[in-house]
Length: 293
Image (cartoon, rainbow, N blue to C red; front, side, top):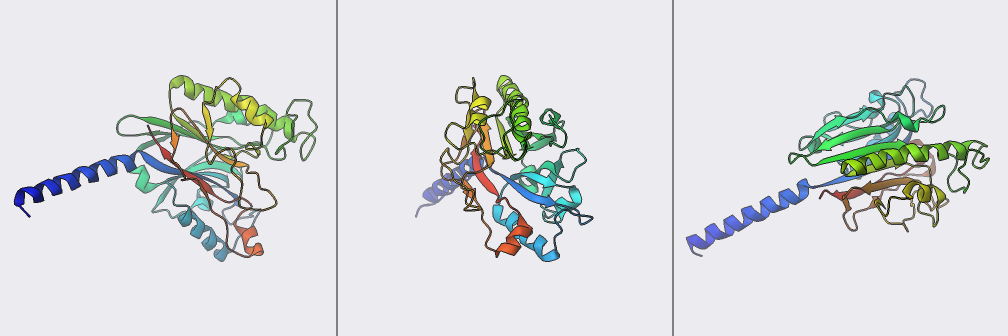
């Protein structure tokens, strides 16, 4: 082989390596996980043993995400009981609660972007005990900006049809009223990002089976947005965590030009026996690869 050909092959490999790194730099995996009352070890609602925490740590590693929306996280002590401090940074809601929302960011990803935590989205706190949204802004070196909002909406109104102020539907007589009140504040946040021209992801425990055909929550949320929102995993996605509940309530919703990479959506289920599963969570983590335009 001639010296000139050797140089050409080396040059081609360098170019391909550069292109590959550029592609991967514009992609990241985002997930969400409601970890069910993860406390700091003091008067925990769901006490966990050292073995329980090790099992949770295993699933953090298995998730292999760059950004993870969190729900039911008490504080940073709870967070670092399963997320390695040397590998993860956390942005938690300031609300004083055992059920905070938050966003965990892998430090390897954090080294490639700038992240600024925004003010808590308190507009979702429409009734007593409802959670704030945790909002971060990701800025790439080329100044491309993305906003992520981690949410945990009102529970108990999973597929009922009356979300009005007069509704008596849901697990109690006010669950659907309270969830219904959260639609407009959530839509306001989305509309603001669209107006700014900023790509966005709303991710978390929506407590709503939005993949069901004709779901009134999704219909009202998307009214007037003309297909600007995309449910990752597709509208026919089924939850794998518990066979009793095939319709998912955890969702990753993207908009503003972000793209879901084909066949990248996944849900991680637990391999442990039932009693151990109860100590992990009643939710299984989901994630998807996102392409930044």
